[in-house]
Image 1 (cartoon, rainbow, N blue to C red):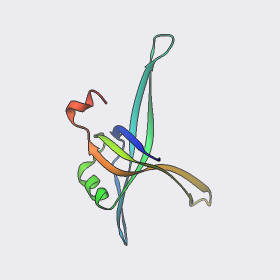
Image 2 (image 1 turned 90 degrees about the horizontal axis):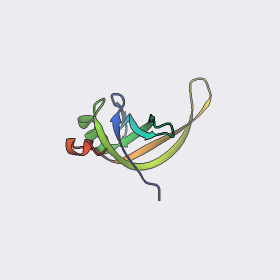
Image 3 (image 1 turned 90 degrees about the vertical axis):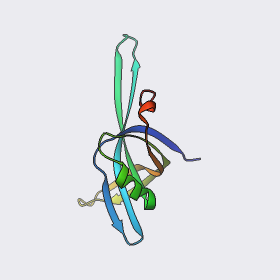
Length: 111
């Protein structure tokens, strides 16, 4: 089963692309993690995830998302490859979303 659930902050404004059969939005999502190391110091780290949503979900994301907003994303991990302008092969890992929701203020303390 290929299933991903992330809770994090939208990292930048979304990018909307129009296609013949609909639209897609892409955005970055920052997830934060912290732990206490053996020296009793708090260590914080941030991971960045590429998210893509298609069709009706893309339209909903357009209305819902803005930089900094805390959201929950559910989807699947996908890998693709393309050739960039410098004629180099680029491999990309992204989350293909099937559900994107704003995290309620009462849930933010637990996220």
